[in-house]
Amino acid sequence: MITSEIGILISIIVYMVSIIGIGFYFAKRSNTTGDFYLGGRKLGPFVTAMSAEASDMSSYLLMGVPGLAYLTGLCDAFWTVVGLAIGTYVNWLIVAKRLRRYTVICGNSITIPDFFANRYRDKKVLKFISAILIIIFFVPYTASGFAACGKLFNSLFGVNYLTAMIISAIIIVAYTTLGGFLAASTSDFIQSIIMTIALAIVLIYGIISVGGMDEIISSVKDIPGFIDFNATYDAENNIASPYGIITIFSTLSWGLGYFGMPHILLRFMAIEDAEKIKLSRRIASVWVVISMAVAVFIGIMGVSMSAHGIVGEFGSFDPETIIVQISHVLSTHGIFFALLAGVILAGILASTMSTADSQLLAASSSVSENLLEGVLGLNISEKTKMIVARGAVICISIIAMFLAVDPNNSVFQIVSFAWAGFGATFGPVMLFALFWKRSNKYGAISGMLAGAIMIFVWKFAIRPIGGVWDIYELLPSFIVASVFIVVVSLLTKAPEQNIIDEFESIKKTK
Image 1 (cartoon, rainbow, N blue to C red):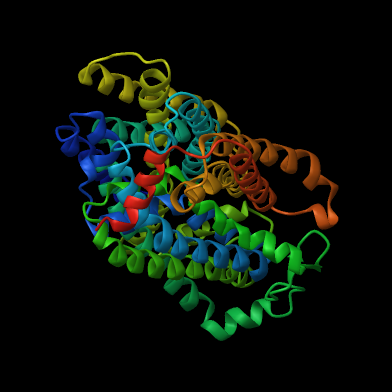
Image 2 (cartoon, rainbow, N blue to C red):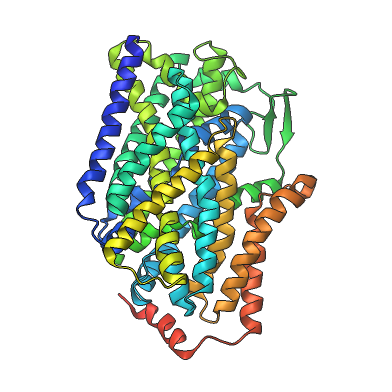
């Protein structure tokens, strides 16, 4: 093994051992399912902010977004990032504090299905549908994270993709199963720091290696549509493809997804003090804007590095591994730089693990808390519930590993579909549950089902038609779900007075 690989391996091993150590540390503090899934609502503002955004940013921050910018240029990645930045801020601004208060008053809910069921006084149907949809969309989402880890080690060390993917999954499962929500949140906080360092190192090295910012701009300015805001680069035909206003609004709709992301919403529910959410919002928003802007620029910078022969030629490698390619080149400059390259690659692992652990917890809670106990009504002890909770994490991980066996699946595309699924099924219901007292369980159920069905219909039947129909499935599905919630709620019986009183009491809660 050469010096560069040794340095990289040292950094990655230190990182992985540290993360597993966090799992062992918090294992003794997760004695109940409330601790395991929500950390006893003890998160501080910094951990809340950074763990929420680390669990959000998944592998698309260091693989998906740079890969998209490298392949198609500024436009598509830019409008996606703008939508996500707006969605992040608005979600923190209008949802976070109200959800934190509501979930305490409303039956002390510890999962999103719990909240919906308690909010609308429907203990079976809403819990069942919510839990099933979480499993449907989180399993492939988690699989994309496992796949990203497999791609990383395969492209770097030549390790068999399947072997690398399975080992990575086992590590994620280990610390999540041991420490639950507190382990996941604390590790996410640390992982967000590693992701930040990784982005900074890649950015600085890339700019220096090509000779400065002017050289980067010079390398891409003549590529058709590459640095436009209303066109993308079509590499296959070497032309600029139009990016119209409909497509821009479609891409901006990524921001709607935040209102329905269980693994992010759980952080709002877990903060120790609702009044500290304002600080968390500021921290989270600033970090998201800067990190995503840097990720887009790294993709553009990668084209310049390809043109200068620093990394492989354009089209000679998977665009989603551009940061891996840059790290590999950096590692050849000596042991110190190899260690830095290892930090970068640990950042990619961090971006993946920080999302996968949160997704596993949310999915397993759907099985143990919502399906077995909530829907089936099994009366089991707290100790048995903890065993079931950890077992659910393992079972869901195994299914996700089976889905991740194909290394050719695009991380960005899988995340895109799962994101749309949660945004359309839970987003409208969450907003109406928090802000419209006239909404009822019938509206919530119909909206959730309409959103889920429309995601599949639009993705596989309508969007392939192309033209004006080529819209990101989240936007039309979100609208359809909202319409169903409003119409069905108005056509059916109004909520009972105690539900209205509970809704009104949230305004008075400090």
